[in-house]
Length: 236
Image (cartoon, rainbow, N blue to C red; front, side, top):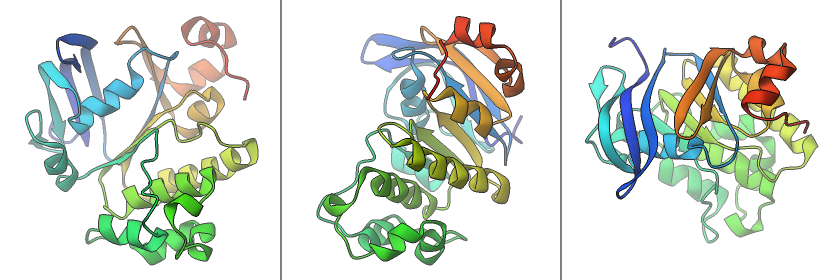
């Protein structure tokens, strides 16, 4: 299955000797998107951290495209096409918007000018320091910084967390544009079930470090009882 943009086979991982993920098998084709849902503490963020190489891998294998990256370092995975938008955003307070993008840029279609076209607010604040940005602007910058790395697979961890509803709506519009207009494979971990189910045609639900549901998002959108039973309904 070398045609998959991202593939995990029987992955068990965690922190030190503590196992958080158990026997995760997941495959994502190029240009496709999947949303990962589940209650707090079920292993969603650990899944992304494991793909990035930030956890202890106890068993299994991970591929990016045709390359096995199971034992590769994080920076080697990034060079092979992995991009990450962390939950904490990790914006440097003493760097300007322009400097954040310049540091992360790699050759490809996504350039700082294209990021400024995608996020006009960032264009207006290009010389502002990270600490001078609002929460929404920091999230825009975290996404833009990942994009200028020109990834083939983009991981996003709770991008709507802590944002006002109007900003979440704007964020959703951007994510939809990225989904529709790029060839990236995209993995979205998100507590906001409305956003997650609207964003991707496919939804994976996790519980206790395992995948308990993998199917069309429409199935969960149209079955509130099932959604409630699997993850609890988020009405934001």
